Length: 305
Image (tube, rainbow, N blue to C red; front, side, top):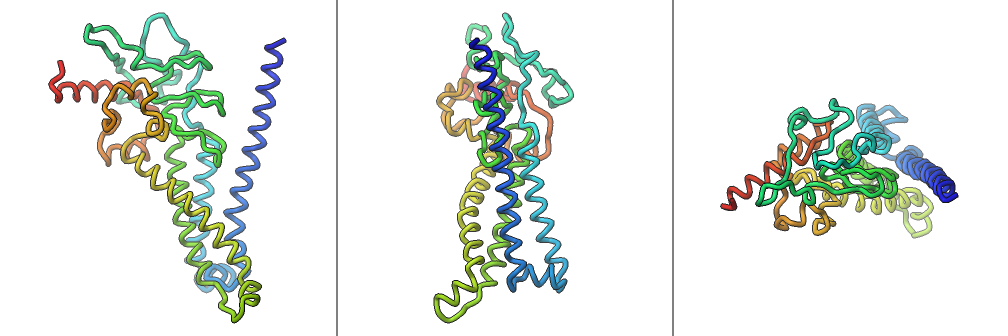
């Protein structure tokens, strides 16, 4: 009886989540299209370029940026953020690194390694290396976290984004950043077009009548811009430092970080290396390998035996 109730609750939650995803993504698309559309009905540079064909390169460039922003948004929404498959990850009696179900998705630089963190006596310290998920009943790969909204563990978990209605993780974080970057440029460009289109009439009533839609566009761009610019700056910092939002916000609770110095990041391999892996590498990494290498190097440099 209890099992049936839980099943019904899970099914209803998924339906609600699907409905919320459809609403949020449709709303985002309408907002992105509505603001440029209003500019086509006013004497703006966009109308001059697209409808009057006076400057087609200008208009096409704007449309390309708009389409690219939407493509990155839906790619981040619909792509796998890095869900950890439950089968093949069940906790075993012997502590060992979790193995991937599909080796072709694992970075070849780390796929053959089986790192273990050891205590001073040489015993494997699994408490620092692993986090056990009670929901999925698996030993999570390092930097993974269970998302209660998605009801799955996510590799290199960053956060669950309500505007995407999905998690941001190892596999879609780059698309989320590219969405923020392209949208930032789009907001600035649209703001300039809108600002220059204001009709300066004498008297408040005449000005408001002629510019009411432009004024609404400016408000949308300002409020949206503050959020997007802030997120872009923060996630650019995370990219350069090879960190995640979760690791920044809950470092003192994360087993593999809370024992380290507050200013030490075991996953930092340098600015350009971090950016390369963030933007160009699509395969999952076994972060246990890098973690052990960096912590061992730190011990040697500190003179710790």
